[in-house]
Structure formats: structure tokens, C-alpha cells
Image (cartoon, rainbow, N blue to C red; front, side):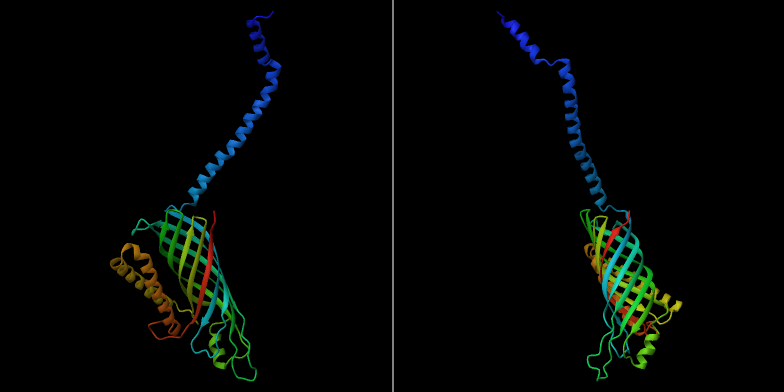
Length: 313
């Protein structure tokens, strides 16, 4: 008979794998380890990448970004002493520039924004039709134009954590535009006046009031109202004097705003006062090109626009 010790040793030998069994088990164990690593490594890498993405998504001043902006809007010309009315049309805008954010001197919850850019835009409006051919009513004036130029916009934005900034901004710039007008019937006086603003390149200056919403560093949306003044002829001293008048007024408003308004209201106060002055000045210049001095009136193009910006890495 087998004693207890012999049975125990025999059971131990059965449970102990042989060297052949070990060879068969080793690849299986290695496959298990490799499978575990294969499942774990992507999660570790994803955590690292998500951390990097969050870091890139955060708006951390100072920051500078090369951006491209696509915009669409509605445009309407205004010119005094034109008997017929203008059609309202559409405008497509493309802007490319460099945008930057800096810490504001006013408040920790604000960022100083500036954006220099090149702009190209195309505008179009179909001419109107006569409602009754027996009447002497004039059709509305259709148009098409192409503009290219440069400008800058700036403002102070309110930041939300480090992931979004809402910025009321003011922009201004200079450009050249080519206009063409179409209408079935125009008075002789209208034809003569419109010839001053057609075919050849015309000098323009523009200003815009708007609000931009940056979501992270990759995407932004903006909505704005633009006034563009087309001059019948370019006179350097006249354009330079108007630019100096505008800049001196902005410096004066900056001093008033810093003195009167608390820090939290400075972005809105600057937006309202500077923007209102710019549009008032452009309206005056549409009647007198060299306001406050008497001179030939310009052509005003008003546009309501929306746009989207994307950063270019």
C-alpha cells in the first residue's frame, strides 16, 4: 500500500508542469502580456495627447496666431444726390492676418487683443426691374465690386477661464475697390455721378464695430457692422488729415475712458465711444470728403457681416 508521503509526492509531480508544458505555456503568457500592454499603452498615450490638446486649446497670453477668416454679409451703397436707389447685395470676405492676445493692464479677467490683416472681398447686387413700364419710375441700381486692402482691429476682451474670450472690437483700414454699376434707366445726372466711382480703382477707407468670440486657439466667430467710404479721387493730404483726426480723437477718448470708467467697463466703453465717433465721422465724410472742410462727397458702402476664423499652424 502507498503511504501518505508517497501519495503527496505523486500529486505534487502531477501538478508540476514538465519542461515541455512550460515551453507550451510561455508563448501563451507572453501573448497575454503583450495583449495587456497593447490595451494599456493606447490609453496612456491618449491621456498624454488629451493633456497636450487641452494645453494647446487654452488661450495663454502672450499668444500670436496666424489666422484665416471667411465672412459673408449684406451690403448697401449710399450716395447723396442720386435719384434712383441702390439694390442691396451680398459680400464675401477673405482675411488673412496675425492675431495676438496679451494680459490687460486693467483687469486679470481681461485680455488685450490686436489683429493686423489683409482683406479681399467681392460684392454683388442684381439690378431691379420696372414694376410698370408705362411709368417713369427708375429701376434700382445694381452693382458688382472687388476690394483688396489692409487693416487692423483691436479691443479688450473678457476671458472665461482660459478657454474662451469675448472681445468687442473696433477695426479700421485702407483699401482699393473697383465698382461697376448696372441699371436699365438712369438720369443723366446719376450717370455722371456714378462715373466718378466706377471702372478704375478707387481709394477707400473703412471702419467696423463688432464682437468676436474665440473658443480656444483654433476657432473664432465674429459679427460686425462695417462702413466703407469710397473717394472719387485719392488726395494724400486729405486722407492723411482724416486719419490724424480719427487717431487724435481715439487718444482723447482713451484718456476719458481711463479716467471716468471702472476697469470692468473699459472694454464696452471704448467700443461704444470710439465706434460711434468713427461712424459719425464716416457719415460726415460721405457728405464732405475732407470733413470738416468742404469738398466733394464720397460713396458710402454699409455692410453687416458674420465670419469664422481658423488658426493656421
